[in-house]
Length: 274
Image (cartoon, rainbow, N blue to C red; front, top):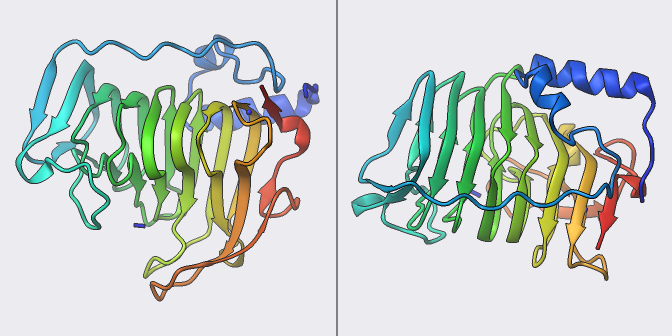
C-alpha cells in the first residue's frame, strides 16, 4: 500500500461552508472551529486525550452506522498484533459505506488501522503509533466522500492516510507529527481513479517528509488551506508533490513539487511556519 496571513473573499468562504455542509460537517461545527481562520492564526494544539480504558482487538471490528469508542484505547492482538510495514495486513476497524467512527484511540500494535469501504467519517480518532497506515480509503464510487475531522496521528514511518479508492478526501482540524506522508493518492494500484483531496486547518509538526502526494496523470487535485507547519524553518517538508502514477505496481515517478494551479492548488499564504 502502498503550516502569512491573508483574508479570503466572502464568496469563497460561503463556498467552503456549503461544500463542507454537503460532506456532513454541521454548521455548528464550522462556526465553533477555526476552520476558516487565516493561515497562521494563533491556535493552540488540542491536547492528546487520555485513554479511558483499553480494548484488545483480535479480529477486525466491522462498523455499520456509528461506532463510539468512548475514548478507549484499541490495540491489536493475535493476527492483528503487528506494528510493521508488511503489506496486506488486516485493519482494526472496517467501515462500511456511510459508517462513522468516533472517539477512538488506536494504540500499539495498530496493524493497518482503519479501512473505509465507501464514504465514511473519522471523528476524533487518534493514532498513537501508526502501524502500516492509519487509514485507507477504498470506495469505488466517484461520489464517495471520506471525512477526517479532528484527531491526530504520530509515529508514522510512511503514510498516515492512504487513498486507494475514488472520490474526495477531506482532512480538517487534524494534527500530525513524526511522519512520512500525511496523504498519498495511491501511485501504483491495480485500478486507478481521479482523486480529490482537501487538507484544511491542520497542524504539521516535524519530522516529516510530505503533506500530500498526488497523481497528475489521473487528474488528481490537492488543495491546502490554513496549514500550520511547526519546526520546519528550512521548509524541507514538501507541501504537495506530483507523480506519474501507474496501475502496474511499479514505483511511481515524481515529476514536480509546489503549487501549479492545477494539481497542487495552494499559495504561499495558505501555509505558515514557526
